[in-house]
Image (cartoon, rainbow, N blue to C red):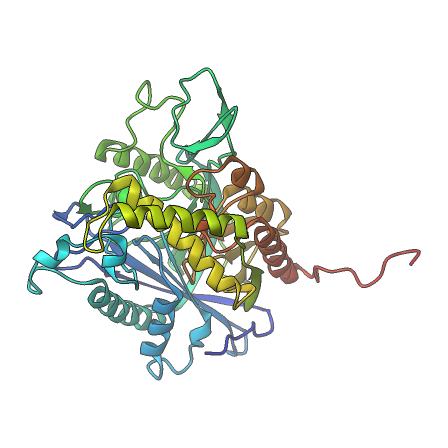
Length: 490
């Protein structure tokens, strides 16, 4: 489908509509987020999709720009799912541009698998032992999901009412860099209790971007919460859970009332984790337990509650709103012939070790998976040079939103926020696609999972370009064209 650019940015009166839909499957599912197979054994807490529909209306009643934000308690949301949703909505809402729908995920590892590739390619076979009455396949879940999402979008759009909005910056220690640097390499989740430990590879960001919405009677209707840490405290469990954002949602509702909606967003955090590797297993609560999940949920809820009055004092109903959507093209991270030859050798060695019908165990399967990824990349780069992604940028009053489809390393997000002309910037990763990891040059030199060519389609050159596109898309709303037409003296 064609993507719509922004209508002319205008000042108008805000209208907002909310809807939340339960997207918890009623059968067992494969859970996504680890290399090994996990089939759900139950539901610890339900998973949801939260929808916010916004539009401004001018004094004369002319409708202005629009946006529909969707946040899902899932590991990711592919472009295919977004396109299926837009197709389902075709003809159902005549005054909504489907190109103005954006969707993101909290990156929980305790939610249904939505992979489009055959599960056998990931060495998963246990699901075959379950009947169709007790098991829901990824394809079946995607159909269930897109149906639920379509109903929620229609409800949120029809629920639009005059509204006020206010924003605030809270703080909560949630994410930490998960890449440990030694004198010869970097290792994800490596132990720092060694003499060759040098430090953590990247920074963290404990800011929590908050945006609150009220009706015209000053009743709180919902809040957007944007934090730079994936929802992965209990990532190894076999139950369905929205992880720490599920706890956050519950605690906010307990304080403000059950009718208040919570729309979670994850800021760039591809190298972040809920685990403090320096104090892990010592003074800090173990952040791989339900106790840790509750602790982080409480920290974010506390930040939201503390910032409420400050945001309310600055609430406005008349503001400038604009929404741009554009396809941008980022260079594919290419493999070298040396990497291809090494991958082919390792692949052939593994194939000699295991028969065609053998189940490849643990570390050998990861090696096999990585070898396949390198060989697949060689085929991709022979046909294409760029990765196409959909970038949304919004201005809502003094705040800006900007999206990307990656597990984007935090340094890129910090660069975007620092150069944004907005008073507050909500950068949203894993939005409108699933581009996997986008690491920094430093990470690639250190190696390890999350930085290898097998772990993502775009590299640092594309990351730099993404920053420039994102900053330009935001700052155009403040009158900055983002380029120079001439240079003095030339």
